[in-house]
Image (tube, rainbow, N blue to C red):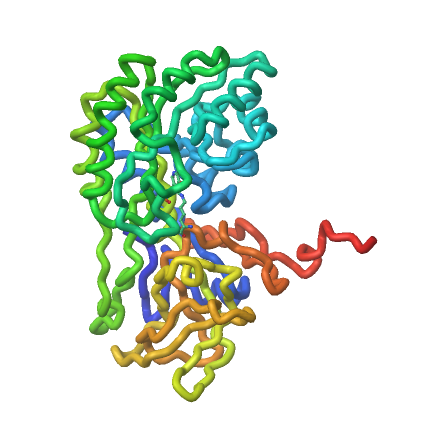
Length: 428
Ligand code: LLP
């Protein structure tokens, strides 16, 4: 479910008119639907009702304070990968006690910060890190809760940059070595082996990889419970979302030409719950994209339409610095005019940004409805890994972010200014 739809010929987010928001707050502009975020969180929570479970939202997907606060109020936990992310969780009203700390390169300072705040668990990715956490905990005279991330060596069937559970990936510790590593870790006096974790990749659109990975982990997890008294098993995130065909209108759909359905929350639950149910452990989930992906769009205005020798370029005011997924992962984001197209007629265009790179595109050879200079389009499903991956490349201020709740729209991050670009810089 998501809350973007045409009403009286205009694209709305819940009850907010996106054209009006673009005019009022300028473009490029990120707009998020609070109803979609809450719906996704609640549906996942309900689908896991048969398990003693905790959802730890992976905040790297979208870490705006307003969104974290929305989820914290629902009782959601968090999954973080840096000290900066912990800072955000705490500022948004979340607690470290419901937060897991992942990542292959945690620094001493980050470990210390997390320990002082009372982190629920470190998801440890190497033996070196185990030693480091033990040492920092010793210096603070505390015991650090840890889980070890297992690399189960399963195929996630996703883009190679976001596949993490294969032997050749840098993540986790090989499944074969796990019993020995737990054994060694159990002898470190300032560690408590609290759980075990895995995460096989992101934007996984089929149930099989999840089911296979959980089944492969089951005997190991049961043994770790028996031998080391672990209390939780985190199965990571990675649930894929629909990037194609997300908008409906009265016309025969130009957007239905390419459909790539993703696994539903219910199918996901069916593939993992039976194998997890009788483990007698708390099960953690670390969804990022699922919660926020379809809840956000990037609005951008068309500045020029350029007919080149072999192609038509639609040049918009958002660039790869505002949404890098197409450039980095060939990510697909639907191009939807905020004014509803009058017919199903389309033309083939490239939608490109103003950044000085040929990789600065949002769509290539894409059939989109005819659009005009000055009109606004929405790049759909940009709520996850959109704003969090922005940069100031080409000295472009980052866009503003808006959170919609019904007909209320709040600026949850203001547009950066030229002054923001140079704050912190000095000429010697
Ligand atoms: N847990 C761990 C340990 C992770 O590394 C990740 C994502 C997640 C949970 C959340 O995964 P999700 O449910 O969002 O798939 N920037 C890329 C995605 C990178 C994912 C990194 N890890 C993209 O835009 O597709």
